Image (cartoon, rainbow, N blue to C red; front, side, top):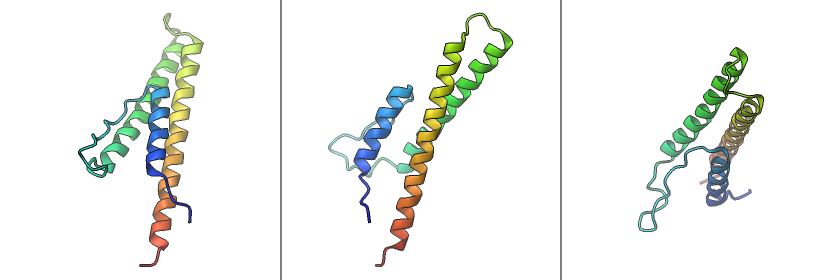
Length: 109
């Protein structure tokens, strides 16, 4: 079995979200244990960030289609690529979580 480096995965997610301009979850300080912050809230924030980038890309593309004077093609393409990258990243994280769940469920106790 391959051990999952949770801290490395979180660091990669934070780096990708910083590059995509997504809000990041606050990091727990050293006095608190790492498990105090609920996983569900971090996952919810990530999904909402992906949804936000997709909504922004849809708004920009709709404005470009209407011929809004302050939107150009490069802005639209950049927003669409950010949305695509954030969606693919979230999809890969989901796949890794499902794989980890399957590994845990197949362990014998």
